[in-house]
Length: 264
Image 1 (cartoon, one colour):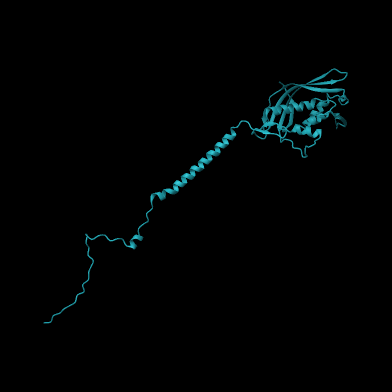
Image 2 (image 1 turned 120 degrees about the vertical axis):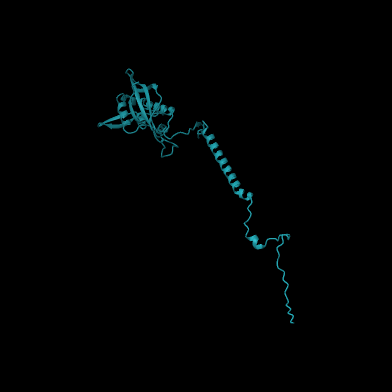
């Protein structure tokens, strides 16, 4: 009887046993899991953004407060080279105050209707201003010519012709003079962009040697236009009396553009 004998290799097969402890995950399993992101890392950019917005808002509020504080100042003074102080107002370029318009009107009336044998603002003899009108030579006091420098268009010529009616030639000989008495000077009215109307009532008194006083009443409405103040091209270190006077007159930035009767 043959006895067959086979050698069998003993192999250990893995067995499933619920009681065996869990095995740690392999490296391949760890790589496939998603990364963990913590909540504080997510909130950090939003916190920084919020801080930046707060800083920006605070800066804008500080700027707005500075602007409001600057605009709330009612008076600003500057000191001129001569040591005097003047108030500076933030106004439109075409704005002219009531005092400036009234003062310019007063100066204009005095130049136009007050004459003597002296140049305005000096003790020098006034030779007058001679011109040709209708083929005839006419002479007017220099102050009348200066007044015409404050006018625009043909207004100056009209006023010069009107003044010729009452200017005696003896004024250049020192035997006649005139003065103006301003009886009423109204408040300026705004009639357009940079246009101002002002009413005036005055009496011109002409005194001439050997004659009774001649009185002429004026009732006029003057229209002034705001223009850029006069800036001389040449320096005013030693200006002539004419240049100095014209510079002073035009410094107000007003030009006469119309004259009409005033009926109060």
